[in-house]
Length: 224
Image 1: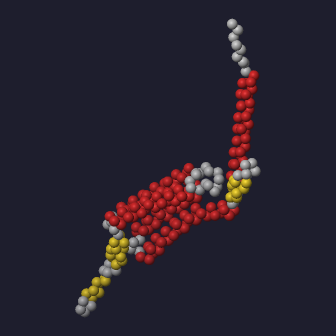
Image 2: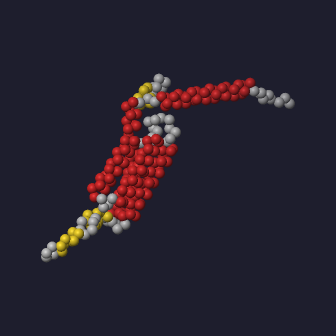
Image 3: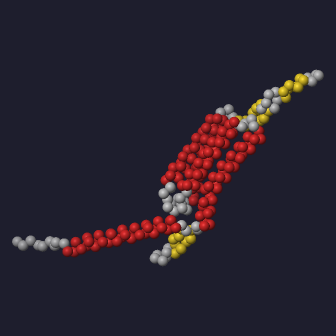
């Protein structure tokens, strides 16, 4: 059983990789603000002077930012692949409260599609000021909100409509958990029935072995 402190430790390890990548980026190739022209220069001629008007914006960029972004995207893609593997391994869990394969698969698909669209928009919308900022912010909000909703809404509905209640077992007076799920209850009952059948088969085999040992041939002493 994985405890909460172990899950927090795994999450801290994943976050530490992000911290290391961003720290190396800041130290090796720091980001600086650079001016970028967004239109052609306009020439205004007066009686005395000639004035050129150039519209510019300040962008935050480093010399090798494409390489750093490729490293971050590769790492995030590896995390998505690990999520796909976990979703595939837990697809046959019969207890709905423990089976997150469907929600994980939908979340991974959502993150992949929205991230690809957001990266594409980010690369081509640097010169579109307000619309580019709105699109990038919208993709971030949609990705995070929909991912959280896909993961936690099924769990909230599970707690609300099919709660897990603690009851006392009449045999050994131990606390067990009754899952409000008909499919899970049916699978548990079928497993209990199989266990009883196996116990009966084992008891019959032991009884036959005991009868053979009791009525088997006895060794008599040899007469000289």
